[in-house]
Each structure stands twice: as C-alpha cells, then as structure tokens.
Image 1 (tube, helix red, strand yellow):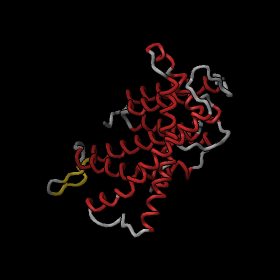
Image 2: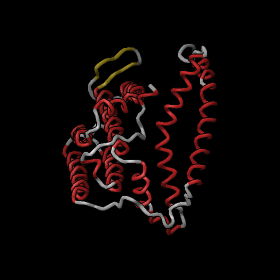
Image 3: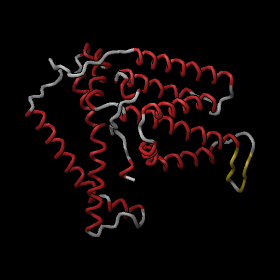
Image 4: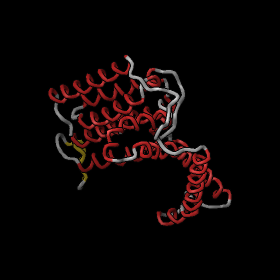
Length: 271
C-alpha cells in the first residue's frame, strides 16, 4: 500500500497538459476542485467525471499510474459509502432489518460521494504528474506575488510548499525501507489488535523522524553551498508565457463551470 502512493511524483512527457503554463494549470486545478463541490446532481458530476477522464487521456500518463494514486483511498471510499448508506434516509426503502435501513437516497448519496472523491483525486494528481517541482514553485510564486505588498516572503513560502510536496514520495520510500528492515529483524507489523499495531509502529516512526531531519539538514546545507539566498534577483532558465493553448484551457474550464450550473438547475439534486 505504501508503494502505491504517488502524490508529488512527476511523470515526464510531451502531452498537451505538460505543455500548459504551470500558472494556468494551478488556477484550472483549483477552479475545477471548487466546481466539483458545486455539483448537486449526477448529470453535473458526470460532466466533471468525463472532464477528469479526458484530462487523464490528454496527459498521456499511464492509466496504471493514475489507478495507483486511487488505491490508497479505497478504504476512505468504502468508509464514506458505508456511512452514507446507513445514515442517509429518504426515498424508496431497499432493505430494512431491526435498526438498519438502506434507502434510495442513501445509496445515491454514497455513489455520488465516491465519484466526487475519485474525480477530486484524479484532477489533483494530474497537476503534479504533468508539472516539474521547479515550474510548480515558480508558478506558485507568480500567483502569490500580490502578497509581497504585505511583506510576505512569497518565494520562501512557495519553495516550502513545493519541497513538502516533492518530499512525499521520498518519505514514502523511506517508510517502506524501514518497514522492510524491521520485518527482517522479526518485527510483526500486521497482526494483533489496534493497540499492538500502534506500538509496533513506534520503531518505524522514530527512524523516519531521524531520517527526515537528516535529509532536511542535507538539503539546507546543499542550498547554502550553492549560495542560495532566496528569490531576490533570481533569474529563470525557462520563462513562463501564456499561449493560445492556455487561453483555450481557461475557456474550456469556464464552459465546464457553466455546464455544471445549468445541469444543477435542470436536474434534481442528490445531496
């Protein structure tokens, strides 16, 4: 399960999504995330789901890699579905026994919520799959540049956010390595009750914290040796420019938003 987490990874390619301006990708991603939560009917959510599938196809990121990003949230999807099925009442009753009752609204809400979460994860994952950490940092800095009026160090903030995102895969690999080392020493991490499993995680978290601080120190030392002093006077090898394809992407996103609003108006809300 640890190896299946692909958050923060970059997949090199020359697709349409890879060639988009990173600032546009950031704006469009957050825009679509907001639109996902505006969906009230299956038709509007279906439009967003089709958009996510189309974006994944345009990115040319292997379907296997995208599915791996969904695997870690399977437990969350199942837990969310169970809560909605048993605690949301309304409509036709499908099953009733003792205090357990499954209704039409509960089932519809469970399916709706699962599709919403999957769409959210896919659209968010495509941002990091198609954008290098360097370009992501530059895009964040440009977008947050108005905050400089309030004396906020935008470059430092963007660098911290990008480094935190980029180090997720590294820490995941470190967890997997530590777990394998502990298992080789005879540690039992998969059996026993909740308390026993929690205690078994202590020999994993302590080496992980030590390794994380060591990597942070090494990174800071390497940046100091390369005379890194922040964003003041910094030049960029690749200049970001808004092209026609970026304008088309924004227009397409606006059309999707309009479509969701129209579909919400004409069809019954699920939640």
